[in-house]
Image (cartoon, rainbow, N blue to C red; front, side, top):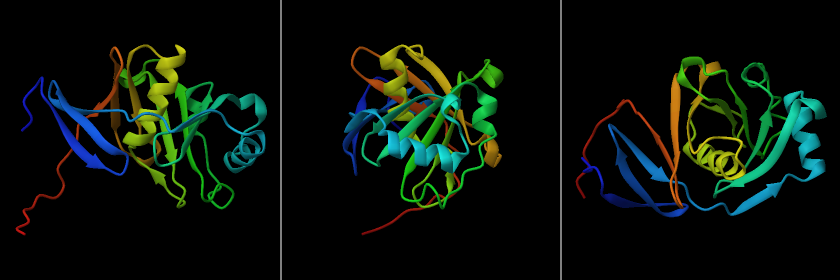
Length: 185
């Protein structure tokens, strides 16, 4: 168990990631964005086609790549996010996150969906939420602390807790242990 107030480092594909206890949950410091800024118009048109969205449906689009290559679309509301039926053949090879504000349903401020480059939807995605959090809190679209819900369409009840401190964005959540084991080397 990690004592509260002490960070540990975990080596990941994105490098060394700081982890700390945040009350009863663990949180990690979002890695720096490797790519940010506007999504190229041709790519955005391809993604809109793959998600059956018009130009007016997309409030904003931004690269939020902290390693895996995520880009994100901001839609008007939660219902628009939940109604998406992606054409995975059209968006093959692209990691697309979609986010929209909620009306505070189930104590969540934003609804998120993650469509993988491999053609499936991920129920709860730390790397995507870390990138989205840097974008939304950095531009003032989101408050420095908010809750995102993800996995609704898949029948999951994922909640991601975001807190922006002086220089860090912390991404936390609760987990359920499904498998437990021990390895001896």
